[in-house]
Image (cartoon, rainbow, N blue to C red; front, side, top):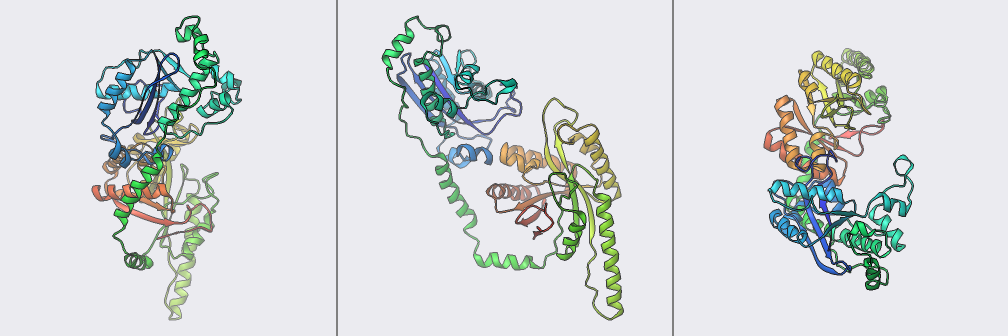
Amino acid sequence: MYLIFDTETTGLPKRWNAPITDTDNWPRCIQIAWQLHDAMGNLVDRQDYLVRPDGFNIPYDAEQIHGISTALAEQDGMPLSEVLEKFNAAMARTKFIVGQNVSFDLNIMGAEFHRMGVENPLQELPVLDTCTEYTAQLCQIPGGRGGKFKLPTLTELHENLFGKPFSEAHNATADVEATTRCFLELIRKKHYTNEQLDVQPDYFENFSKANPQEIELVGLKHINLKKASKKIADALWEKDTGGVSSEEIEENIQNLADAPFAHLHNHSQFSVLQSTINIKSLVKSTAENDMPAVALTDHANMMGAFHFVKEIKAHNDSVREKNKIAEEHGEPATAQIIKPIIGCEFFVCDDHTNKNVKDYGYQIVLLAKNKNGYQNLCKMSSIAYTDGFYYVPRIDRKVIQQYKEDIIVLTGNLYGEVPGKILNVGENQAEEALLWWKQEFGDDLYVELMRHGQEDEDRVNKVLVDFAKKHEVITIPIIVQRKMRKPTTFFFA
């Protein structure tokens, strides 16, 4: 018997070599499908289950890949304990576990069995993987490590065997069906040995007689999970937003029309390959838009701080002179002084001294409240370059704890820790991260909201607003068309 299975998950592990007992490292299974075939390739059983989330949610980025939303899994999913029981029963009937790049799925399910404390034969059963150096040699696709051929994806292997690609649906049932077809065709074409399959010498001859023609798909009907999730999401969105009238929205816009706004997240030309803004243009744009203050938050460095303060000082001297002349002529002094705010957007990783792991960390915006805060930013920037540089200049939480005095922190853009974990890890972990920053910075923590009209930002913002209300953190709304990296583009509130 051959048990071919596949999973869909909440994401990817941080460490691929972590043991299954490290359950914090391994994502959660949210869909599992399998097909059980006898030695001659006949379908004996097939199952497909969504797993109901318990104590976790499905991140947005994972949902975009496989289409399974938290709402859909809660509505149609089965408790994990029942799914594991059924999977255990299927494993009891098989001789081999089969899959495409199946080591990932083995670890996912192994971690789930470990979480639930359920005994299983998953780690003991012999494994047949359709993604190996042998199938790489069979497909001969360049681009592998060390000049070798790359390991084939499921669609690449399918195209090699059948002359047409398989459109990977990232639906476990579709992937299992295609993997099964490829696996059985590899047997039919005698790409396995008798020793690998532990069979008698006449096995391949008998298999070919039972399957004289090219292996076909079983012909399963696959649910469009993205469509099913969207239907639920549209209903929830209507429920959340349906109560706000166009009159209320217009009134809110008018109320904000005269509200003062200061842009606290800007990158200049000192953020190499990230921004084209020169500091003189930044100050000029700030003045033209009547902003009372502006911040400079380059990536990990403070090299633009001197030029930034110098340009604003020159502008303010000019404003004072204009206002003085206006007052002397009995005219109102309307020109506005600009307050410079010096900041830095740091790459905050787990351990800035660890150069064995490619960890860029999360992008966190820190602002100086005064001279002492500025000096602390400079110290952290120096540490990032001298001690923490590995692909990018990095610091970690311990460094921030040491130099956090007189510093304001923003949660940042989608690459910040809290938004990033909402999108890629889970809302529970994101909330834990927010609470850590609140514990360290108290009222000097602000939640940053960005609105570029992107679906991922809308999803994040909804969760951020809920977190801010729950934990009494002030939000900073930023309504934009593009991120402030070009001198002709502005943020408006």
